[in-house]
Length: 229
Image (cartoon, rainbow, N blue to C red; front, top):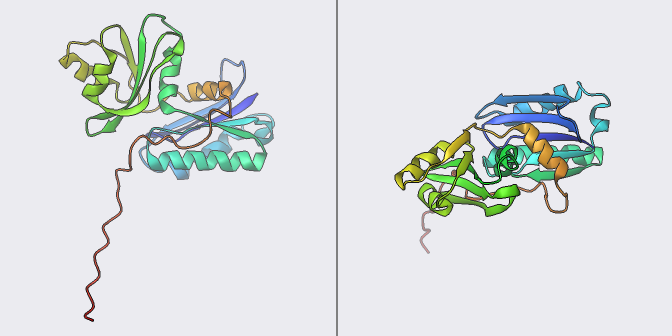
C-alpha cells in the first residue's frame, strides 16, 4: 500500500509518501512555520507527487493529523486530505499528533512509561501516556501541568512533544524525574505515515480531535439602542 501523510496541525507543514514495508519514504518535505499552512501545503504535495512513479494514481490511502493542535491547521490538513481522497476514490485515516510523537518510542523499552505532551499554553498541556507495548494508560486530554505530573506517579518516564520540558520542570517540583527524549514542535511525518498504514479506517476517521475551545472568541455584538414605543 502507498500512503500520503500530511501534517499541518502544529507549527510545521510536513508530508511524506511511503510504501508498506519500506524503510525510507519515497518523498519527504517538512517546513517549520507558525502561519501560512494553507498556502504551503498544496505546492508541497505537487512537488512530492512529481517525484514518485505513478503520481497521484499510485496512492491508496491518505493519512492526516487530526489534532490536538491549531484549530486552523487541523482544518487545513483535513480538508486537503478529504478533498484529494474524494477526487482519487481512496480512503483517508486520521492520526493523533500525540500518538505520532510517541510512536517511535513505544516499542523500544518495556519498562518505561512514554508520555506525549504538547504545549497548550496558559500552564496546560495536551497529554496522553502509554505503557509497555503501546498500551494506552491515559486517553488524550488537556490538563494543567501539575495534574499531568500527578497522574504519572513514580517510575521511569520518557517524554516527547513541545510540552515535554514544561512537564519535566513541573515534575521536579514534586520530586519526580522525567527524561525528555524529543521536544520538537511537530511529530516525525514518517511516524504519521506508519500509523496511517496500520490504522483501520473504520476506527480512525479523518475528523478533528479538539480538546479545548478556541483561544479566539467572536467579538461581542453591541446592543441596539432601545426604540421608544
